[in-house]
Image (cartoon, rainbow, N blue to C red; front, side, top):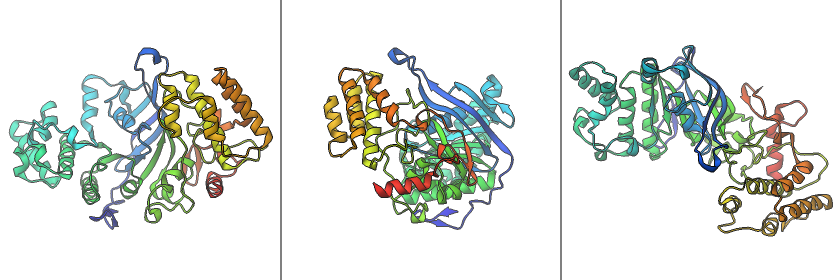
Length: 449
């Protein structure tokens, strides 16, 4: 569907592009950053073993919180970042093995539109020079042919011939993004990574750019990877959606199926946060508020990457605890993990994650902030006290082990495979037969909370 000037859905081009064979196939792709220094042995695991494919002529939406690895994944697909491990196959060829002319040919066939047109356009170059730059770099045609090509591209994206000699600062945000799109189309690519292409624009301009992208896809048979954090935008343009968290794809399926029947707890939390979600997402439960922030990508959880924040985490059966109690225990475990890492400024990081402001925290303060208003069962209180005693001696790792032994979960130790459920893939251990399904658990726990 297309969007009107207010961002509302109207009948349009979505779904009219024929989706064909696989164009890009990604297998166990990893991108780690080793920044050197004291933390050189703990690389940033920006993309951590993702697998998916993109069909010819489709739009795959890639969504998730800021910092989850979306942009890194897009840049790695284009070989703007070097792969740490895994494969990226395009028409059967592993492009991670290409070099020289073959690699340049792939980068000619695959282009990128960037999030911020102000920073991606050189303000010292005219629009004509900016759009012509890829043609010059690849030696496309003669000067007259390049000029004709650029003018044709400007017209195709809704700009005028007289814009050729103007500079980026003379254009609005939406017009600048049209310039970026024209530049991406210059070499007639088949695959385009759209990295948050409308997030910096107001709603009415967003609608026009999305409609333009759909029109270009229909005319030229383009294939898109559409990266965004705004799920309402993605629903209007994507054929399928991949949901990313901490470098992992946790749910992947047809757009309408994901929006109307989310299967992974993280997807549920994202959809529940859309304001007035009745027209955009069909989650009918309570708003799901996730505690804290994602774990440090240098030290991700050993099991499920979402385990430290999951509203449907599998818990031991022997304890009768309120939702507030379980949240406090999980928060205390996260604090102890942070402290055990002994990073520079770790205590300040802990305090920020707890939302308690700047400055150092003692274990007593942390315990009081997390558990001060709770009436815990005696056995739970004794275990927490034992952990506090260990932490006060400086043994944060031992303190966390005490809590893990008593309150730990299979989610802490087992990385979930991609389960086929409700017509899509979801990486959640609750899809195993012995557990209650994620949706039901999230509804029950958020209602209690």
